[in-house]
Image 1 (cartoon, helix red, strand yellow):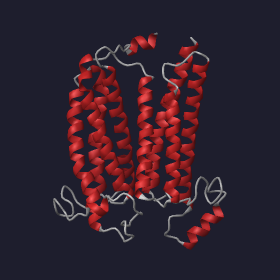
Image 2 (cartoon, rainbow, N blue to C red; image 1 turned 135 degrees about the vertical axis):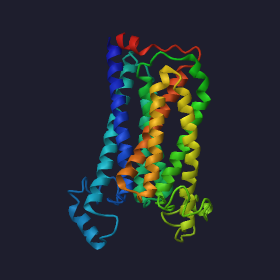
Image 3 (cartoon, one colour; image 1 turned 180 degrees about the horizontal axis):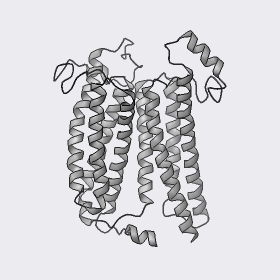
Image 4 (cartoon, helix red, strand yellow; image 1 turned 60 degrees about the horizontal axis):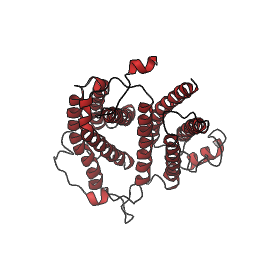
Length: 349
């Protein structure tokens, strides 16, 4: 009975943390898209204070000195709310660690290794370090993109852990044959998300202003060496010169072109997975979100990057990642010889 109560408490905590981490990823996108990343140019506080309210005088002075600069009261609050949100996620993960290890020490271990939440704690510490570097290194694209990918890694790992804590529907043994295809879907999606993050952190969204061509050409002039050189300052080449438009076009065009590959693969994969009853709901979710991602991506170009659509595109990528992770978990759980308790029976147990 005690083990069951601890398991239920842990399961609910994991799902709450997963949901809030999804919100954090979306708010992080909002922070980036509103140019609020340097709203508080120090870390972890804001001008040495715990909140923009306390740092009001310093923020006002900075804004008056540079009205079009990165600091304003609104941007400071956006940046600090993002940090507060991340701290709250950290507290929830610490709670997971405490529950899991306490249960193990009482010799009533949960149905999950305590090393799972421990790995999450280590991951969020690394994520916090990159969050600090994002500020102190002045939004250097490779740092900001890594910060984004670490956040999505945290979200995906939480999604996997949440799936482990949730009773599965009766599995389809035949679905286990598609493990490699499911892993390929995840890898392709992660690469596309990384390319999208590189577009966003380099502000290359409007480098191509039309569709399906790019600036009136199918293959426009591009500078891949500049565009994909990782270690450089924002808006600069590795030699310290202003980055060229051709480099931004290369970044945008690569993300756009690879999107066709990813969309085609995910649609074909999801349609195949719909044949299995245990996979139908997440597969339908993948189909829906892929279509919405294509629409929001196209809308970003046609309507010149409206903020709500850009945030939706960022959030859609995170939701799509969760769905593909869930599919991978269910397919792996369906491999021959793996016994999975049906959801209805598990709930009644």
